[in-house]
Image (cartoon, rainbow, N blue to C red):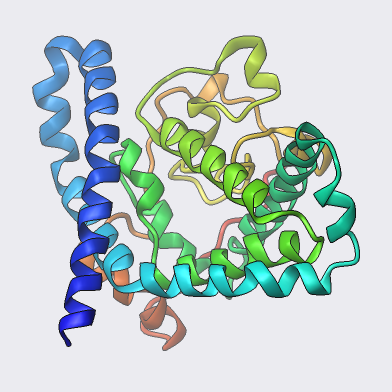
Length: 277
C-alpha cells in the first residue's frame, strides 16, 4: 500500500510539474489575446476547466503507471519482432524522425477517424463535449480513450521497428502541438496552415455540428486529411461554438457517458462525414 501511495504521489507531482508551466504559458497568451475580456473568459471557462482537471487527475494518477509499464515492455519486444529494426538503427536520425512523424500521423488520423464511428463515438464524445475550449481540452479524454490511443498509436510504429526514442520524440511533438491547437485562438496560421493543423482548423473539428466535426482529424499535419478528403478550410468558421452530444456533463457525467450510451440509456448520434469530403 505504501509503495502504491508513493507511486501515485509521484505521478501527481509529475503531473503538476508538467501542467504548471504550460498553464503559465497559455495563461499569458490568453491574457495577451483577451486583455480586458480576460475576467469574463475565466468565468466562462471555469466549469469546463474544473471538469478537465478532474479528468486529468483521474487519468494521470490511476493510469499513468499502467501506460509506463506497457510502453517499457514493448521497447525490447518490438525490436525483436520488426524486420526493419536494424535498418532504422543505422539510418539517418532526420530520416527516422520524418518517417516516424508521417507514419504516426497516419495511424493517429485513422484512429481518430474510427473514433467518430457509432461504436467508439461515446468514448470520444467526452473530448468533444467541451463547450469552452482551452489548452486543457487536449487532456479531456475518457480513460478508455487513453487506453485505445496507447495501443493503436504506438504499437504499429514499434512493430515497424522504429526506435523508441523516435516514437517518443514524435509523440512529444504531437502532444505539444495538441495543447496549442486546443487553445482558444482564432489563428489559421496563414500559408503555414496549409500544411499544419491550426487552432482554427482544430476548433472546427470541435464544432457543435455533427457533420462539420467529421473533418480535420490530423494532430499536426493536414497531409492525410487532404489526401483522404476530410480537410475543411476553417476560415469561414472562426470562433464557432463547440460541444456536441449534449455538451458538458461534469466529471462524473463524462466518465459515465459511454457506458450509458452502450446500455441504451442515451441515444448515440455519431458525426457524419462532411459533404465536402
